[in-house]
Image (cartoon, rainbow, N blue to C red; front, side):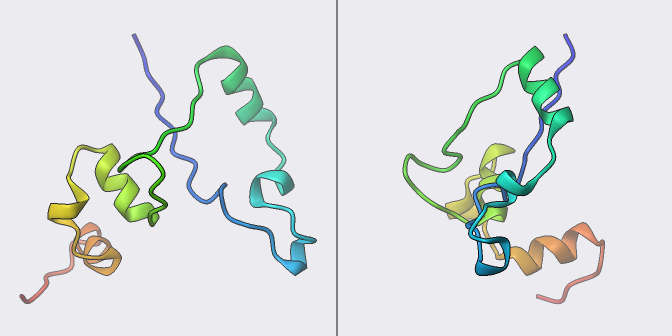
Amino acid sequence: MKILFVIIDGVADVGTPETQFMTPLQLAEIPTMNQIVSTGLADLMDPVEQGLSCESHIAHMSIFGYDPFTFDRGRGALEIMGSRIDMQV
């Protein structure tokens, strides 16, 4: 079985005066996303705990099996590690 796991980060953002208070998802042209959803499974999830609104790096850590309460060192540290830049502790 093949699985495509898509994380659509930022679609829960709020609209701004410049977008006439429409959200990114309301503004998006999404025929491909509609096709994927119509032929598969789609759902929403609370990645860390029910009702907790968290930053995306926290959610991503949790989705991939890391306890963000234990391992979170901030977005900057994750971006540096992902760039393979040596860090001094």
